Length: 251
Image (cartoon, rainbow, N blue to C red; front, side):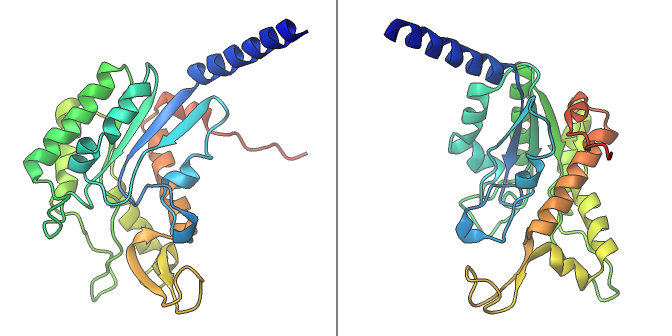
């Protein structure tokens, strides 16, 4: 009886690992705008959180984006090595950095433009060496409007660098900077606050003093940004798009 139980357990484990290995993994590497959040940060939400629910059971999203990380610190802390250790043929890597790379006042994370391009190139080349598909994403825009109510560019230096690397290496590119600004413009200067972590004092127990944040997203904002990423993946005609969950037919 014990032997039969052990054999049955081995069969189940083999089936589990076989199924796991057959799944396509989508790695998200980046900063706080995409990262998974602790419950103590709620309702702050990274766009990688709702993105993970867009696909059927054949796709697994491994969101390794982390608060405060630049391309430099993502590499130096071994986070990229973590991704590479399980990356396999047929996987995808969504690469979105810039917010922290461009912060000159934060010397612990700042990355020069030249080093930024070198680091993006490293991500792309090493993902391809694993026979995975890298996708470069420009840094998502912060919320900023001019006196005429027009959504302003907030990554004038680092967004073009992503485009330059994508063009040079022939990598699929999602211009999330441009797409997110268009979204804010669509909502308008006042209503676009709903997309971000903006709270009145005592509106939420995690932020008793309130919060005015034009960088990090609310649940609504994260979902809208995730939808933009998904739509661009469809526009690029990436094979991954065929594994998006199909809507249930109405009876």
